[in-house]
Image 1 (cartoon, rainbow over the protein chains, first blue to last red):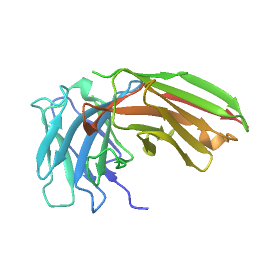
Image 2 (image 1 turned 120 degrees about the horizontal axis):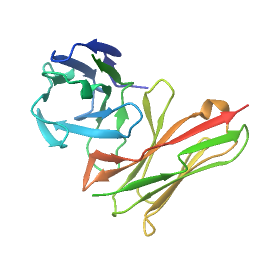
Image 3 (image 1 turned 120 degrees about the vertical axis):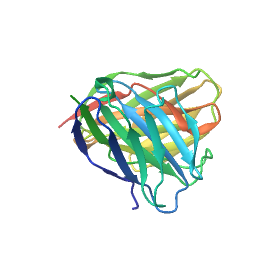
Length: 115
Length: 110
């Protein structure tokens, strides 16, 4: 079965450093999403992306976050200057389209630790 | 904003037992997702349903749109079913912008 793949699986970074989390969505999917889950808390929506632009973003997705699809296959989440509170599991997901009849497929997650 | 509540928060069962996990939400929705988060952290989509009932193997999901309530049932539970089960609903009309419940941690003992 096709799957969403994410790299790295775990990254440790110094506070203030830039981090890029990478995702390869399922090949025929057109809608892409990032979510995060702080340890012990609920999963939270960050951003959705379609046709090379952001469709929706949450309050969490502030100016230190950005997303892009640099080469037609990868979908990246960049955190410009990491803070301790950015430590979380980040999930990438994709779907064929955003309609209610379509399943969202999640990756295994990238665990980010900011020290 | 939709509020998503799940119950119970934690559930311990003996292998073979019938399991029910409940989810309620406050605002009408177009579809509801049931997700499984396995111990390694990854998330798998189990069901997406907008009405009635869906079945996949030993898993059954039902939804009552009028009562704003959904249930996930596991028949003949097995230790490999041990995971966190999460209910999620769209925020407004957007499918990807989901509001997630806190999850139900299920532990099935042999």
